[in-house]
Image (cartoon, rainbow, N blue to C red):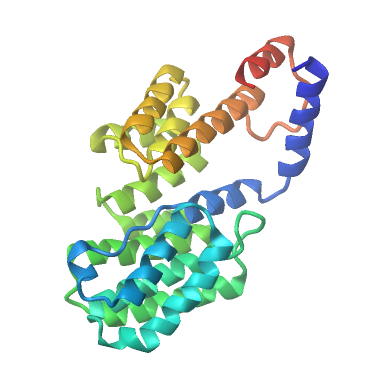
Length: 277
């Protein structure tokens, strides 16, 4: 790739991302990309074949970023909960509502931030899920509810409130959202401290890659990618690769100043970009 082509690519990226609310939008996208896993093995035996198929399909679609398909499948799960699913346990019904809320928030895909109506709908689903699960919720269900609430607060730009809801929890759901906030605030020291405390997990190893790149530890970032290649599924491995490319590009272009508006690149930057590409 020649220098002119590289500059054209970078200029195109810059024009697309140079909006006043870019940072908030990127946080929303990362939050929407959270993996979800809500159906415990012991619950599966209490679902009929149709309910189990819908549940698994919706969860896979969300985790694979197939958001438009997930939106349609979420409607099927709603219908099932209103019919055959009425005999499922209250906990299982509550988890179904949480899953639907994740699908509703992601229904617009990556093209735009969630519509206000989707956010309102997700808040309503969260309230219904809390009512179904009840005050004697298990620790895991409390984390699931807190995770959805924190996601909604982050989407609304209330990251501090979202972190407060998650508290000191070290559950994978809470850790994943915390790391997302640290990534977008570009606080790699705080994020990597949490990574070192908790170890790697496929739910948020892509965030670990970004944090290592932000901190200038490229070898560590590449080590996480290799870990994901062996330990995680293909989608997660690819997410780590994309995370490395995105974070490295930002680091080369902006260094520590992400507010810089000029796209004039030094020869060193062009060479680094050529290597990255």
